[in-house]
Image (cartoon, rainbow over all chains, first blue to last red; front, side, top):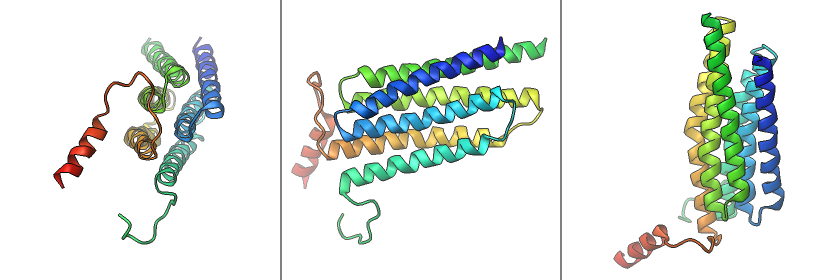
Length: 95
Length: 120
């Protein structure tokens, strides 16, 4: 019963990821796509957690931290690029 | 007995988290513009992933008798960073003049900017 609920949750999460991929492909503007990609990263964290519960191992828990950090840094880089055209600005006089 | 109760709590937490992620994705597909879509994605997806990570933490506490600090760290990190990421991407969308939907009736940030310019 417990394992079946875990598999149902994985199925629901995969449906949710498919809907996010639809918005990523179709999305009319670039921030739409970035929002959907960020949410796909969050969903990957959930899928990894449920997978480590299903496989009864705690080896994937560092992967959760890494995916969370990488999704956040990717979103920040995208938003800075969309706003100013550069990601890392070297001169501080442009404010 | 207590093991069964903890198992039921874990199952409820993880199923609730998966359903919240599904709600977030339905909101992202069906809402009209990027601002409302970001509202759906950041709030529901954050709550869903926090429920699922709490369930996983409880599972490892029950099955292996260890309190895994990595999961708590992941919960805290996602709780801090996900609203920041949503706010950053929506601010850049507003500054690059992405149009709002037709149903929008007021824009508080534009009024605030006009008052700031007039005050200068």
